[in-house]
Length: 259
Image (cartoon, rainbow, N blue to C red; front, side):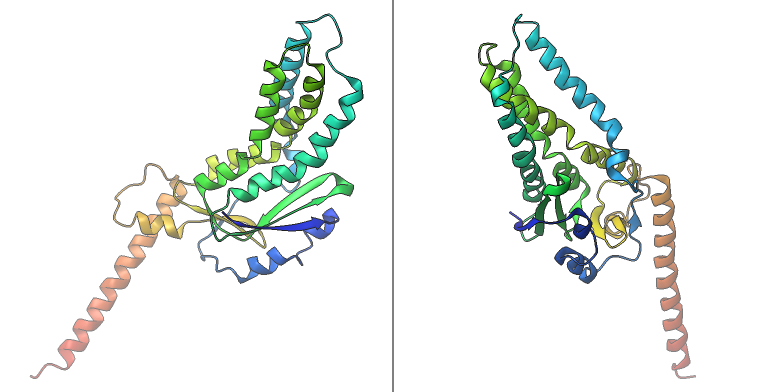
């Protein structure tokens, strides 16, 4: 399990001011020269709004389905504040904690909240494989699914339980919207076998690991055209370098041969 460090409550602007512990760790990391910057929107929250639509529809369908089973109001308004407390102030740090536990053993992950802006964060300098990054991004979806499942299967007479579950269901499915967006970006732009890592300029993926694995492969059907071209030039450069060294060796050898 990763080393998880609680960073407390901070102003959101200070979280990304470049002077945090994880920023110093990122600066110390060695990033391959051929690392490719992943193109992501500048305003992550605004860009992820369309990804909230389907989760909202799913939650509203669940509510209308339960309402169709009774002519009465299906919620207990006295318990609605508790539902909001769970949905916001408990679910926010839990969301980031689920991100953090997805990192490999030895990784250092900082998690914290910004209560003033009702936001939370998880930050790490550790590199993740493409598959693990996707798993890490989608991990916070689990509580939302659980709360929604309990809401759907519980009897209509248990208004207290449905009330407690309704806000955490919405928040659990909607809050990972930026993560949904990231997953689609990763699936489209990052080849299998690459590593993903945070840098001062944003997320990058490493091509070098993929190239080493595929040096002897003639073609790469799983890799995008751009990466195939880069691989071709990389192998060509290695071949020319070896040939040049061999020729220089032969010249030196001939120079010292007795005549």
